[in-house]
Length: 114
Length: 111
Image (cartoon, rainbow over all chains, first blue to last red):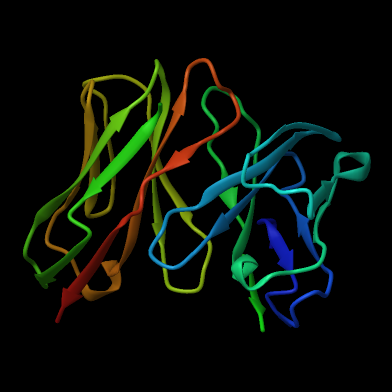
């Protein structure tokens, strides 16, 4: 399978704990995006990388959130001191940005903070 | 501010009953408009990209069209397996990164 993969698929954590998610993009794609999606809403942009450089961060990305993409391959999204409001589906997408950004999404990581 | 509004929020159709989903957008110069399909608990699946007014794209029972202010996703003779949430998204000409999504239309096709 050459699509975008994300791990874990589900994560349950207690408030105040740190969590880390991983995304492996489609191999020839140089752009990688993180989104958050809550029930009944469309995906909301969090941040994006072109190769290893993080080029933009949304206002939604508080200081408790950090993302990395070492060597321009896989990416990790870490949430520190989780809060119940962080419960959501975290989606990763990748693209080649040829003309317009046709982004291909992974299956997502469902985070539940108790 | 760039914005995407989809209507209706939910739509129930009988199998074979054709209909259209609407996506109205406001963007400072359109780089591209995208349609995605999302099944429950899964990531969005890319369907189409439209670049300019008058453009149309087709895939099986789906056809997407674009005007200067809105896009339609026409569903012809739908089947129960077409049931999903359909998301519309736009990318602005001056922003080659962020894509703005609408809230989606939940489509349910009754057998």
